[in-house]
Amino acid sequence: MFVTDSVSVFAEGTFEEQIQELVEYTTRSRPDDERASVLQAFKKTVGIEGDEKPEEIDIDHRRSALKLVLDNTKGVGEGTEQEIEGFFNLLFSHMFTLWPDPSPEISQHVTSLLSVLSASPSEQSLVKYRVLSNLFNATPRRSALRPPIYTTLLQLAVSNGQLDIVPFSKPGIERYLKEWNVSDEEKSQFLRFIVDILVQSGRPDTAYEYRLMYARSLPPSSELRQSAAVDAIAAALRQPKVFDFDPLCKLEAVIAAKDHELFPLLQIFLDNGFPELKTWADNNVAVLDAYDLDRSELERKIRLLAFSSLAFDYIGRDMPYSQIASTLQVSPSEVEKWSIDVIRAGLVSGKLSQATQTLHVVRSSARKFEREQWEALEKRLLAWKTGLASVIEVVANTQGLGSAGDIAEGIKGEQGSQVESTA
Image (cartoon, rainbow, N blue to C red; front, side, top):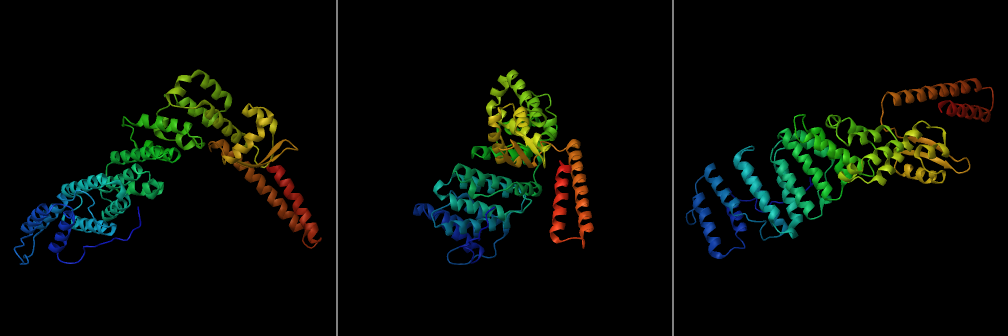
């Protein structure tokens, strides 16, 4: 949420003086007779007669007086931004003092204020962000009021095309969901809302992260579970920057959808390559259309993933262009283009050599990390350990027996042997 300084314009004076200031603010733009009528109702409520000060006001009359203000709050009012924020800060302060949270009354009043703020003119959006943020911060961390307040704030920002002005992050959302005293169903609904506003704001890549959270949040008994899993699968396939399918495939909701028509395609992206995709796509044109999947984009992604899987076996070695062309089923003249693409995608790091027609692989991402990948890593670590032991032995043998240059040459030779053995 926003980090703001609370502005309190009406903070001085007795309770009745503060409430009278609030009443006068809410009726500032109304006709004189209407203003006088509301003010008279307020004085009657708190027991003010003439210029005499009332006796101590009990909590019921205090609540009635503040309810009069709430009922007459039809918008943010006519005032400066400082006055608007100060008005609502004082209103929130009295509201949470007079009614406990949770209670039906406080829930009703907050809901009413959210409707008022949502309906206010859009040109006052900046001060409304601050008011809603202050309301959010005024509620207890575990309060069930926080989700609707936060939802209203995000809806307002999205409707004005200003989602960036309300920063939120996955760790922050996860923390809120742990704190809020709401049902699991309400938490799932909130995550679905986050997905929708991110898609609406043109952020499908970020929305994908919350699709996974949403699918994970649904219990096995939920009727929405399979549709959430299918939506996540389709989004992962559709997004050009999503290459890590392993977390998706480990979701219980996705595993439970193994009989769905999209599941075989997901398996291809986790385990297989271009030939398998081509066969599947040729036989499932209608499925591609139903889920708005672009075949050319799918072919691009599977080639990049196949490239990465191949490179994983060549870490520390030179990978021939011919092998890349064969795996990707492209002509040798296209290999450098695909090499640049896979490096830009962050899947592989390496150095191209036109002279030797090879790509020296420095790093590569595995599509999944299971027993086979752990065994390959173990072999590389053992080879590295053996090579390092040889280097240490060379250093020990050459100490005092040769010049610094001789020692350096000895270490260099052993390091070369280490790289070859690692490969």
